[in-house]
Amino acid sequence: MDFETIKAKADKYFMATYGRFNAAPEKGKSATLTDSEGRKYIDFTSGIGVNSLGYADAAWVDAVAGQASKLQHISNLYYNEPSALLAEKLCEMAGFEKVLFCNSGAEANECAIKIARKYSFDHYGEGRGKVITLVNSFHGRTMATLAATGQDVFHNYFFPFPEGFAYAEANNLDALKEAVDDTVCAVVMEPIQGEGGVMPLDKEYVKAAAEFLAQKDILLIFDEVQTGVGRTGKLYAWEHFGVKPDILTSAKGLGGGLPIGACLAGEKCANVLTKGTHGTTFGANPVVCAGALQVLERLTPEFLTKVRAKGEYFKSQLLKIDGIKSVRGEGLMLGAELERGTAADVAAKCVEKGLLVLTAKTLLRFLPPLVITYDEIDEGMEILKNVIENN
Ligand SMILES: *Cc1c(COP(=O)(O)O)cnc(C)c1O
Image (cartoon, rainbow, N blue to C red; front, side):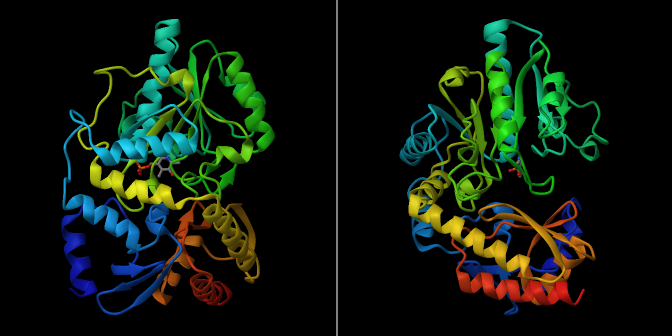
């Protein structure tokens, strides 16, 4: 089908919740996509941080297709091997006791909030259910995760929002201390705020905050939906700080392209959710879990070393472009501040020239597949350079 036909159908029948770029990729290999009319795109987005192993990775395709041809779904009323293997692998690799699988980042965060509130209820009774999040955060699009998102633009139209959320300025320990009272059960942080503009937290702040919260038995939750699964050059970004949260949420890159969320709990919270207190029809789906297992099997220390090296190279090439003021982020989660023009305009022009890039607030944002080759980086960078320098 040609592009205009696809676009016309989508625009006619989709609820218009997205402003879309003019591209409809049909297939890909590594970090290179093509559409039905033969146009080629270098992908610096991974479908928003999802396709960790790029496109058509042979082992991932085998794992997923092989499982789909055997047993596609069975529900959580029974056991299934891929999900058991994945649970073991993820808990062992990430250093957590137990996991709950769901289907998205928002759902993983919902689960984390439920665990935090129940933990608090079990130990302290009612009235200690408030969750503090950081200003400029993003935690999802469900009602509770919208309320948890620390940006006013998300708190519109859908009133009434769930109560029990408050916000503290990031990297400001005093603000956190002020926000914390005896009604608070947990604090949620993204190690690097993604949608908020690729804003890393300070190491000192995170360490001091973790100590302060631990003293009060207030749970520390890391939303690693975007930063997780090798994205920043570590399996999870908490490793950069040396501060392990009580609860960690993961999603985006975990399935390598299939929908999965995971809520991981350490010792303190491993047994908070008990029979009947939470559930999901699709969570722990065997096809999705087979794909995720393949992703984790590939994330060896050597692989992560390569991600960090590619990230450094990517950053250095960005900084060579006349018109990029600064670059921030870790590994292959990078944001670039422009000297002129808007990020949205640059992103749209890049698509026309065969490069997919993301934006976050006023920044260009890059979340390429972790397997992107140096040649693909160079090819995409050449397009980006031309667009920015002629803008
Ligand atoms: C994308 C994202 C979410 C929401 O994930 P969905 O899968 O879209 O529900 C939550 N938190 C962070 C940090 C994210 O980047």
